[in-house]
Image 1: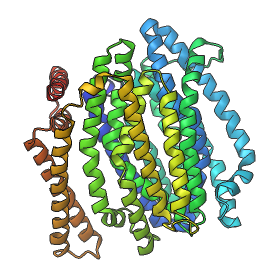
Image 2: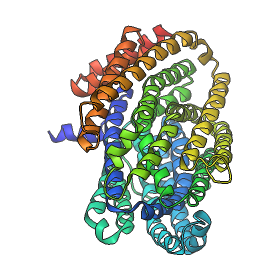
Image 3: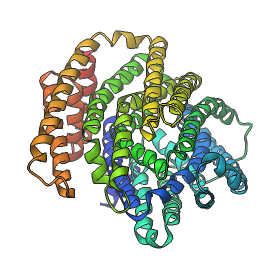
Length: 551
């Protein structure tokens, strides 16, 4: 029993089993995230929630620029490259990164601690003096988070590179659970401060559980400050373009926060809450799958298997479209019901519900493009090219920032908070188009895989139209049978629409012989019917063969 538990926690995962683990745990994590937001809405007035979400921006800016871009785009490819030659050299790279994270994050956190009273008024210029003061206090506490997350994401990078996904996938559950517990126990007495200390505790636990597993597979907690090492220099070269891209994303979010601070009480919170809801399908069905794919993509490039690399990209593109296009349609059709179920409690009134639902609907237009942007960007990272996707993403973010200033304020089109979501979606579409055309030119094998694209989109259109018709009909029928003024009435209508619409959509795609349906079915079989290791391996081969035959 103990050996089985150790194997589950520290054992190596195949692409299919890794994606299954990540999808299921990401689903659980996002469900917890929605519960967290529901408790936020229940315990904290929306006006005060503004301060919590605004306080997040500056620490999150630091984490995204210094850590997230480094680990995803730079550390994993370099770590795997060194590991192909010598395992000890690969661990040496990890030790240097531990030293770099310590120096950079501690130094910047101390600096921000001192500068926070001057930065917050620039971030939320239209907050009252009292709200600005509270935001400063919360942001200072939140500076612990990027420090803990810095180390945690390095450990995640090691686990991902070595295809150990279980604890990596479990860590967000622990993080979110800590925030929920802190909110339930202390928010009534301490307000937004309880939420922030929950974030700090959660980020520490996120780090601690991954450190334990990383040590079991060979990591020694040693710090090296040899910043002249060739591997560190290469990581920096790969990191800089990615950090610029993430910096522009954060600049967009900071700009949107500043715009929202002038749109009335609760506007910052409403934008953030709608954004949290719309990220759930993308994270569950998109980012988890991409995370599982990325080490294999990097290995294909390292081994010069460009044909397999192209096939993997193409299978990922089709899979994400099949799942996220209907998810976007469903969120648009059920946006009001979704917001009522998740946030319609406590201090969250009807006016906030309508505004959040409108914002959610415009976010949902770009679910598929958001995921595909990440997938294609990772393809470039696997090719050790972080500059190209960065330039393209910067273009998209600049478009979103410009449109945000035009759409949302009273001086522009006066669309309010929903205008920010629309600006974000349009920027995402532009980024996707340019990214795909560019990777298609770089990886010439992709063009040959497009021959059945017309048939694929025809089948998707037929299934999508059926989905819309079924969901709308179900809303009318069940809405007339239940009390829509009650939580359970809204829940029955929403759950019924999701279940019936999904079944009809998947049935039609099965009828039309879309091979991605087989991929989804096999994930469920592997997880719930416990296929053996040999069956799992055969399943992966069958899925690859089916996809290649279809193309």
